[in-house]
Image 1: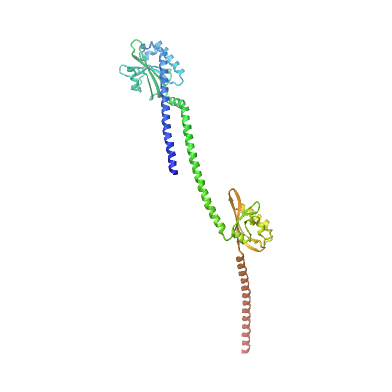
Image 2: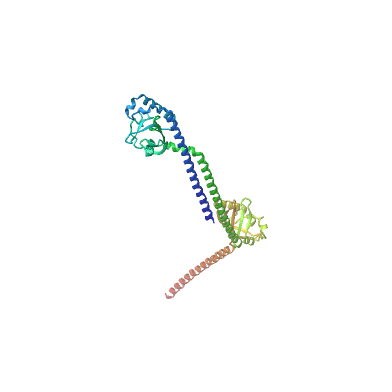
Length: 393
């Protein structure tokens, strides 16, 4: 089910991305078309404002450089180009009878590396631009590359007022990178809105998926904790040694298993909650230390180290004392730090150790007596041997 839900969300995001990319393309193309129309309108207006009545006198060669009309028109081209910061070049193109396209003039000063002198052949011109000489139609072309770079260009025909024929083409170039940046800036608001919606949707689906995963992990963790608690509870109730939980600040027991109640002769759990380590210990330990102070010290040590093992002299509520081993460990439970202790009554073990010690002492005495008898027998043998030697003399 989780995989199917994840796949469904992925499909939704993918479909939305495809739709978004389609919308982005539509927006960009629409903006590009609008900018091309604006560029073409500018080219038409500039061409009309230049007043090219004397243009038919140009030959399209270096001889034009000496003509006053050429110099005046050149200055106009330079001035107009400088007033359009986005525009890189403006120029006039002509056509030789053999079909070659050439420059009448451009907006570059003569000392510029990009200057095109009158008559320079424009080999990179496309067929669409050539056809303007025959169709007299306006055109926006590009991005297209030539020896000067990559451009988006507007072309509009220059007509002979008497014949109506195309005598030149007015061109206007914008750098392709500038063109792309202009499209981006003009489309930015729309694109930003779409991207924001898309990102919000992705973030929403991600957070929803993450929340679901977290919930699943929490349920799994709670289930594992429940299983663990059940196992611990079973061990706690059925363990044959005394198990207890101690709150270290108050030094009071907060829980104990049935074995603890039995070993210490505690009536019930209510009585257990009123007790602490001092109530289940004699006043002093065998080494003379005060039990309650020593118990506090060992609890602090167990908290620092995480665990501690030692022998302890305990006392049942009936007053009977008995030796025990204590395994103490720190337990962090639900943000609270407790001490868990396991107490094992080692009375039988101590009795066996005492019996063994007593038996070993008896063996030692017997051994010494035996060794003494053996030495006495050896001495008697020596005396007999001396008597035998005396009789022989």
